[in-house]
Image (cartoon, one colour):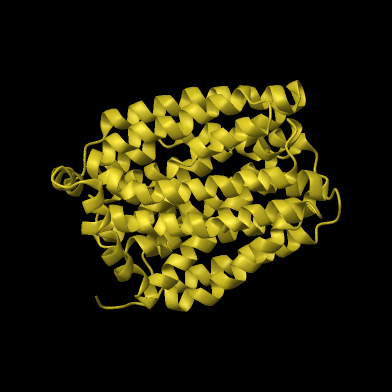
Length: 417
């Protein structure tokens, strides 16, 4: 057993050492974003409630944010091609994270959070440019491993989450979270400039910058109908896209409502919430280091079914958790985390390999625009049903997981272009 683990560990780090250029830089600087995010994320929704927002308003802010994300995602393809992957990532990371974290830090009411959510929605421009910056010069067979290591970088940051619980217990919720947002503004801004210094514009990016200078925005957007046809008339790519949307619904609900579910629904104390990201990080880290290197290059169907089955089991157990039972809630979260560890890298890698490199920025812009527009009603719905029972947002996660399992055969089927 020991020799197997050592072999797996060696394989894991050999994969990491094989990354070059932009890929390596993007992964190595990620903790400067991930650590502060994981510190404030477990308490973000409770912070909103403490400053006077209702659960329905939390859902409304989420829905409005997703609508703006749809718009910015659609613009992201042209902006990424016009400014370049590197410059776009710097400018819009500053606009979508550095400024909103400062607004969250001084927030007083619903309108502060609404403005911050709209600005934060520009992250969808960055999602496009950053993905292109990170993977365009990397071989396709490395892409699942790249996304896996991005997750690893953020999971490592999750081990810092219990520190936020200590700060909440020591200083109370609102002062502690204000301090965490201040830390996030500093750390993330440092990361954006550090990444910008040590990355280079991609080969395709340089070509697209030259092409974009010859066209107006209107001319560029005329390509979209053709690119949409290529994406959505293909049944396998369409299924892969729907899988991305359902996974995004899960992520949105987890990031927005998990704290509310645990604290207001199950009765877990606020100061304990930071333990959940740490436990999840531990189990996901084990899977990524010792299991994912062996399965990351395999066809995605079986890993996705396996992961979704564990995720659904965890959600059901969380729904059934007795009030105040921390052990049960942690166990349910542990099982769901196993599922998430398999699902996200394969979902992202699957859609990345179905999009043509030549049109990646614009096609991924279309994908993300429809994903976030399609996800928006679920944020509003989750907030509305949370007013009835704080556990009910889990029902949406449950339905999304079931639908995902049904989509896996079509979404992962091989095709010839």
